Image (cartoon, rainbow, N blue to C red; front, side, top):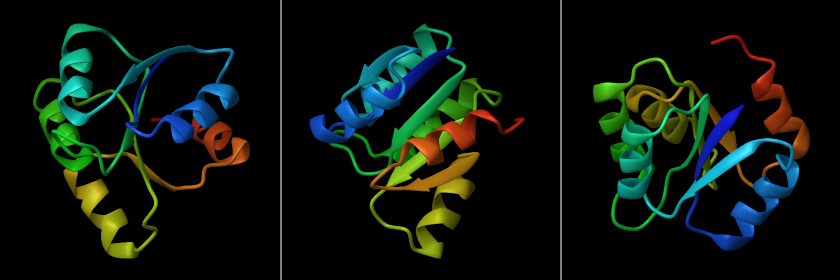
Amino acid sequence: MKILIAEDNDSNYLLVRHILKDYNLTRALDGADAVWKARNESFDLILMDMKMPVMGGLEATRRIREFNAKVPIIALTANAFDSDKGSAIEAGCNAFLAKPLSKKQILEIFSTKW
């Protein structure tokens, strides 16, 4: 499984990388980088931080959806408010995970049929 991780924070990225060490991972450091990589490579899943420099996760998700409606995009955020979840889903995310992430949370996403 090839996964794009759009995450600007090194600590958060290292945690996800550790949990998903057996997968093919590509990192994007900001939303614009995530859009570029999603346009130029094929991914089975995208983990999208909502707050990143240059372009945030919501805008990046909207732009990816313009050319790829099928790839599952999972919103990652430190804010677990219902309004944040609603904004992520409205932008095109398939699911929403609140930080800090756990191995259980991430692995449950893999059992979901999109």
